[in-house]
Image 1 (tube, rainbow, N blue to C red):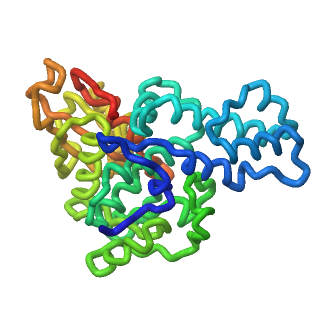
Image 2 (cartoon, helix red, strand yellow):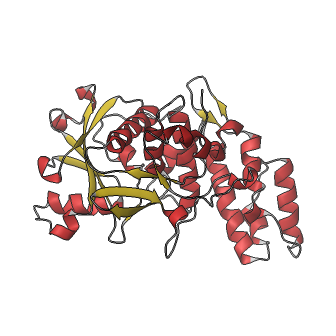
Image 3 (tube, helix red, strand yellow):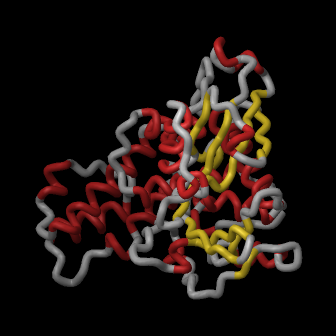
Length: 335
């Protein structure tokens, strides 16, 4: 079986009998060994001791009072965030359960890079055994912002961090442990170069053609189906639709903040201007395999998923919306 996304650190984790990811000391140590937490030569004694002790015992309790004694302000903030993240993982049986608890709390309180890395490694687990590079490349939208690269009539996506921009979004991975580089040319994924994705999956340097009717839209639908099944234990079918006007929005989920705003306007009966409508990149219809799972008033009503870009042509997908926005009677946390 071909491996992919090694940088997420999935090899450092265990799995329980249900297939959920179980945190290990090795996974936690990878965080404490990151350059951001490596005390510089002029670091205070408290910071140096904390770093040394947590590398030896990554589950060691560190009090808020001890962290507050770290002299450097930036270092204090880094340690507060990484310890809050560490404690979140230790409070739950699996990383999946920790993620569900986090997004359902409605108060995440962690920088996006931590949440994106959690999505990255959980999605790697959900897609284990997947042999379709198009599905894997489409799934990168879950945890890495994308920039639209218009090309004639094609709708091409490239990784925002790779192609740059005025304010590239930082993404947390374990790349520094692998001596990997992300300085590479972006090639659009195609049947001709798809076999190369496996060697390049941690570079995030392959573009994606999201033009309507193309393979990538169906691939994104498949990735979303696997995500819902893995985390909620619910089977659903997701099919791409042609245009927004094909949908009667009885219930919808915005897959990003812009899509949610557009859906809200349509819900209230507004007519979208051409510029706003052009920001919709993809539309999907979701159907539960077991209709009884849907809220009583929606058992026979279609559910729609909307993906859009910002006015700056950036796509920042929010995969948590797929888990918290569906009208499901009973939600079961992944174990």
